[in-house]
Length: 358
Ligand SMILES: Cc1ncc(COP(=O)(O)O)c(C=O)c1O
Image 1 (cartoon, rainbow, N blue to C red):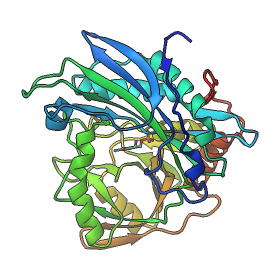
Image 2: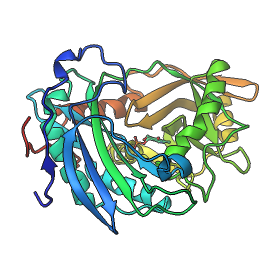
Image 3: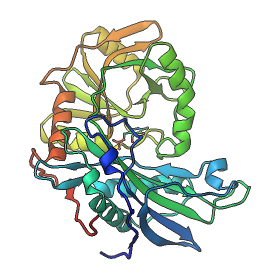
């Protein structure tokens, strides 16, 4: 342990009231959380404390000007009870990339990972043992300066809390290509996991749902021509046996699942193209019978299969995924790594070292 993280254990665990077979997503929280403060140019007050609300000043800068970034990751458990993190250093790096774009300070990446080990180790019993279930981990950083003024805060808070989530078996997703609203533009904050990006997506997502679709296919903000992402996931197409995903250009979040897929696809010998892809190309591929799969990629679902995609007045219906579909193979690999049933040849899975016990 390099850092001195002070631990105050909760007096009572909430665990006994949780039904692991029936967990509402995002509404159940584990016993402890990690907190740190950025004061006078450095990070300090590293603590694990009982999970709970805290007070903030009404002028808290994050509430007014949106200096807030976050991460989303999962801890899983093998059949013999070993808790695992997947590529935690990638999340440590990405929250700093996000923070940097929002003019927020770097958080030491080794402290981020150490805090995860201590927090998850302490609340290990909250990792659901059921296949496909996991402990969702939510690290976030926000400006807590107490003044009104559009300027970077001089103080920040970093926190990490967790909560068990059940298996995510999304039904195939109905997609609509969005031509009124945009998620992100080049030069904006689309590549950051900034809180404001998600706030801005709520209205278009609501309208899409009212029109009968599950998610939005986001197009670029200049020409509404280049494909960016799907909902809050990266997107993959299989065209003529080649896996194609949009190249990141500053407006697309660099998903960690996306990156893991690249490694798996290359290892398995698939043809992979990371390049700009237009909605017209997708329509043409579909019309020529060459578009065999469309799926979203992200931590929550791993793979979310697209059943149909509507662009203007054309609805493109995709065939169902089968055992040999690229999306199925990718999901199986990630799920197997998380469960410890597939050998981790890439050193992605990090056993949680239990530094503090509950
Ligand atoms: C906008 C957006 N795109 C893509 C992703 C997928 O990223 P990851 O695979 O790191 O979860 C996420 C989820 O984090 C997201 O919020």
